Length: 52
Image (cartoon, rainbow, N blue to C red; front, top):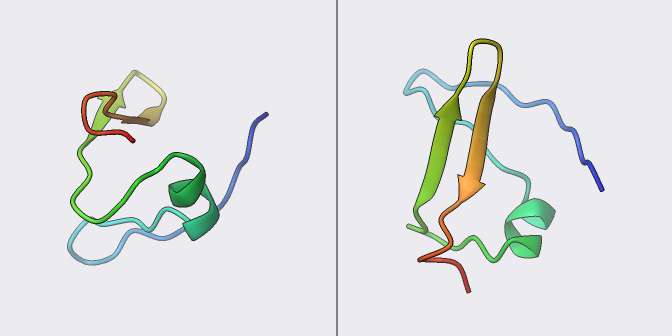
């Protein structure tokens, strides 16, 4: 299943991941994620070592 959402980057470069997605992936405060930058995409992966 693919879920798309729009968000804005704040002045500190932060984005908000919607609560439902955070809950679905077990992302809590201070959970590490991996950010992958390709030539045309930015992908955020849950870090399997810190995931529930």
